[in-house]
Each structure stands twice: as C-alpha cells, then as structure tokens.
Amino acid sequence: MSFKQFFLFTLILMVTGCAGKAANKDDPWESWNRGVYSFNKSVDNAIARPLTEGYKAVTPDIMEQGISNVFSNLGDIPNMLNNLLQGKVLDSFSDLGRLLVNSTVGIGGLWDPASEMGLIKHDEDFGQTLGYWGVGSGPYVMLPLLGPSTLRDTAAMPINSQASFMEQIDHIPTRNSVAFIQLLDQRAGLMKYEDQLKGVTDEYAFIRDFYLQNRNYKVLDGEIPFEEECDEEDEEDCDF
Image (cartoon, helix red, strand yellow):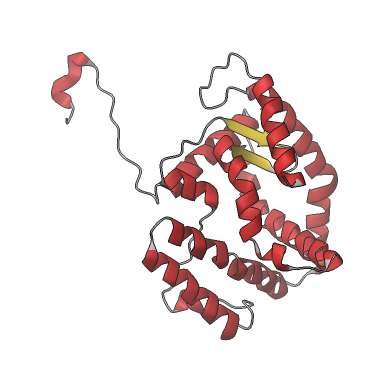
C-alpha cells in the first residue's frame, strides 16, 4: 500500500468515526467537512492565492494560456483511457486524435488546433468511470488541501494518480517543479469563478452542492433524467 493509499484509507476511517446525524443525506460528515473547509480556506488565503496572484502578475497572458494548454493536452491521456473503460470507443479515439494533433501541430500542446478541427475536449476520470458502471458516489467529503470529493471519487484518486503523466517523470525535482506549476495553473483557473461566491450566505454549502451536481452531470454525460414529484391531488397535471 502506497503512502497516498494509506492516507486516503486512514482519512476514510477518520471521517467514518465522525459520522453523526446530519440534515443533508449527501453530507453526513458535515461537521468534519466544514472544519476541513475552514482549514483549506485559511491555507488558500495565506499561501495558494498570493502565490497564484504573483504567478499571474509575472506571466504574460499568452504564456499562461500556453502552459494551461500543455496541461490540458496531457490530460487527454486519462480522458482517453477512461472513455475506453466506459466503452465510449469513439470518444476515446477522439481523445487520442486530440493528443496526437496538439502534441505535433500544436507544438507539445502549447496551442489547441484539435478543437478547431472539431475534436471535442472531454473531461473524464476514474471516479466517473466507477459512476458510469453503477458505483454510487457515497457521502460527500472535504479533503485536507485537496478540496471537495466523495467517497467514490476519493477511492479513485490512486488510479487517477497512476494514469497521470506526472507518474512518468522519474526525476523527483523535475516532477515537483511540474506539479507546482500545475497547481498554480489549476488555482489560476478557479479565480474567474470567485465572483460567484460574493454574497453567498453559506459558502461551504454552495460549493458542496455545486460539486455534487457537477459530478452527477459529468457521470451522466449531461443526460440527467427529469424527475417530477406529484401530489396525489394533482395527478391530472402530471405525466406518467
């Protein structure tokens, strides 16, 4: 068992022990999760956000976009693998096509000519693959430093990690440097959404609900079934 797997297993045991009565059925560990969210928020305000603001200040927009494109291009590797595991062969070949085109014509992924050619960008991971094959999401959990997740998505993290290009970098200093830049790029990508949190009464609940709805949308590929609840007195107004 690797350190990551041991950490995740220990974390699951910890939050299971903290389970209690909760108002939200998707969030039975809300007390624990809120505490972790406050911790993550403090770390973000003290370290991640200032570093990201500095990164954006010194990095030209065209270079920042190029860096983001490179990581997006490398992300097509797990997209391809997970689409294949889900039986979406055409989507998997499309991901492969994107990877080949952007890695060559796009000069290592700095540009994205594949999108201009009509090759759609997908967003797949092993958590979605598990969900595709009927594995339930399980309770919502806020992970220290890693952010929002579910029990299913947390269990999928070791597989996601193994499928990442980062695992192919043997030189540890280089791997750490690339991982640091990727974290800055990911945090920079979130800054455009921060205005949506202004005026939100319960920031924690807002992020939780958004995450759960977004993950459900991705697992179902946007094909969310329409469910209408009807009162017995109004049955004539309902379609069955």
